Length: 91
Ligand SMILES: [Zn+2]
Image 1 (cartoon, rainbow, N blue to C red):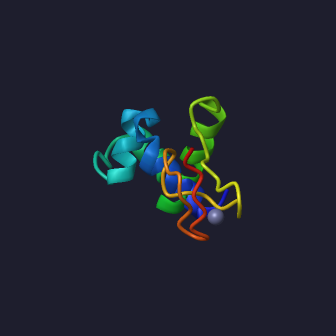
Image 2 (tube, rainbow, N blue to C red; image 1 turned 120 degrees about the horizontal axis):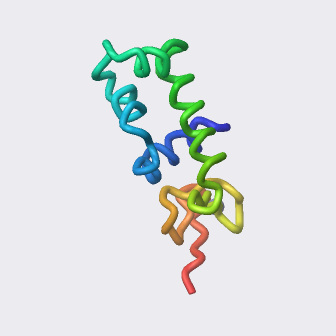
């Protein structure tokens, strides 16, 4: 999974994270074994694994809004203009 896809999932689908994942993301409750387990391979690996889990568990809800012209990921799930090629797909 690309870094921009991981960031996109964390930004727009944060509500699917568990409480312990939120704690791990904020690096609080670090005395909790579950948080320690989540972060044992570092924050970047944690974010990648969590994004993969969300995609696996919520495939119907997570929408990658890719530009119909260049195929790159838009800034938000609702965006109707590409930040890269500036293509606009409003009705
Ligand atoms: Zn584009």
